[in-house]
Image 1 (tube, rainbow, N blue to C red):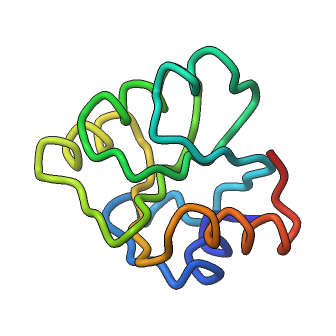
Image 2: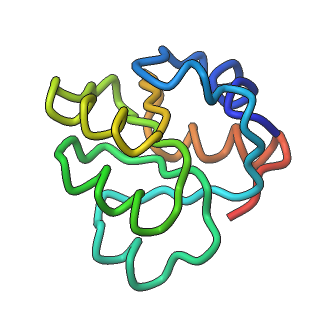
Length: 112
């Protein structure tokens, strides 16, 4: 599955990272607790979260994630967007809540 596929499945808005939409992804996780992401997540390439701060991008970067999907219609500020651009991380935004968004991706074949 590609990031473009995720965008379509979640009816998500692209915030930044258009040049990486063709990147392949195989796993995802959903969490608002970055400490849990750091402690328990292995080999994930997409992070779904409702947390909107720079720590989300820093955590994704440390875990080699290529895409962050903000759920519940939340959107990042300019500082978060600039940090994601520097790190080469795609940012998407969907109006879906976390559970339905994760369910749709799982149903489409993305695993956690």
